[in-house]
Image 1 (cartoon, helix red, strand yellow):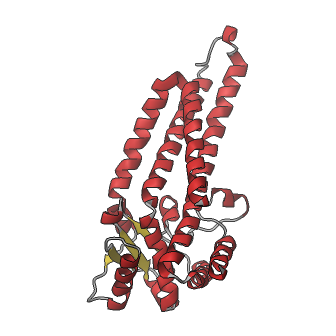
Image 2: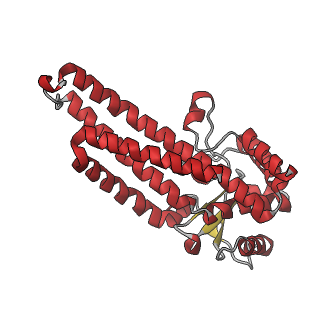
Image 3: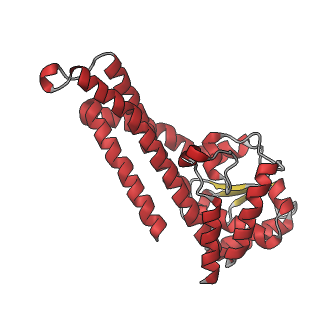
Amino acid sequence: MMNQFKTTILLSLLTVLLVVMGGAVGGQGGMLIAFVMAAVMNFGSYWFSDKIVLKMYGAQENTRNENPAFYDMIERLAARAELPMPKVYIIPDQSPNAFATGRNPRHAAVAATEGILRILSPEELEGVMSHELGHVKNRDILISTIAATFAGAISMIGSMLQWGAMLGAGRDDEDGGGIAGMVGSLAMAILAPIMAMLIQMAVSRSREYLADATGAKISGKPRALASALSKLQNASHQIPMHDAKPATAHMFIVNPLTGGGMMSLFSTHPPMEERIARLQEMARQ
């Protein structure tokens, strides 16, 4: 419940930031143009996201005949989550990871690497795939796309403001413009897209916490998911996913990209220690 509320607050902040930026660059007209452009790009990606990302990672569809134990596990978990049976894919990569995609539960797919099938126990794998079905159940692909649309529109408006400031296209001196106005516009143009990106990343981290909680309820084994996350973090560092793309990093259960310190602010995933602690608390309760 708290993560749902946090997502609502973060999306509201993106909306406010978009309105402020739109007013700065040219009122509702400038805001609308940027929003429509961002919406077209992001919702096009949303509609075809399953095909794009599965092809990007060379995922191969898995049937009951090819891997009956894994297929039956997904079928059982989907029924427990009251979801339609998703398509099941295997990614030919030894780095242990998994993700879910698809624009809605009726067009969903779950994918797991060969590496994750190799290193996890059946209970741990069940916890991971329940997490991925949690993303499907919570419609996280849609929410991520909405956040990306707002952030993309803010970034476009920021570019407009930068060009306007550099070309001196601000208000005149009588209206409080001039050099001070150009400096203010340039500062807003630089800072607002960074703020939007931070908010977008925070939305992604909030949805990861929610998928952990939802997945733990689906499997009924929060400790198994906590154990899996610990294994995956260590193993993914030892066997990195060399073909991982920043644009799709948020989809995986563990971040296939590395980075710490200040980069954690821009991370699509919350700290692993915190995720594990929350799952262990769920198990105690």
